Image (cartoon, rainbow, N blue to C red; front, side, top):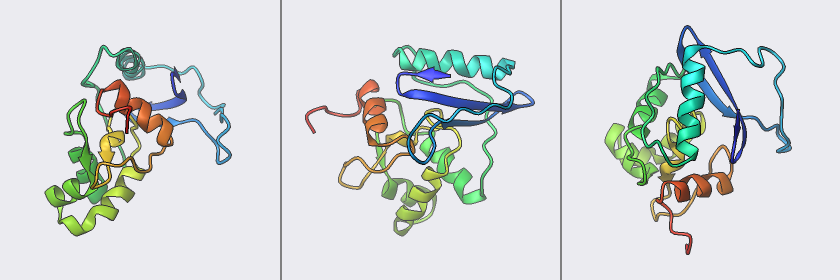
Length: 157
């Protein structure tokens, strides 16, 4: 699927969305996956439609059947990240305090890095403790774009 930030891959099985990932190789060039290109299902069509709406500023909440694979800890982190409201941010430390303890902020960052459902599980809404932009699987420019789209980032910063 094409987005304003480049192409993403959507993967579903049995009407459950399993993965949304950036399609870049290690050298940041577009990576095309040949198997099952063009395959479709109801959940994939819904995901594409809702992502299009999101990028047009018409959708703030996703309503999709999700089934991300991960450890129990990752699942807890992703669930908590999913609670960060549109247009707001939270720090890794804040998420760590909610699910475990504040000393696990780095572990929260690692779980966010493993997020298999970019944008829908909004790890782009995670920022450093002082509010600074931190790493993101799509790169800092993509994170900044998404936060500006949601008006959660002041362009003057």
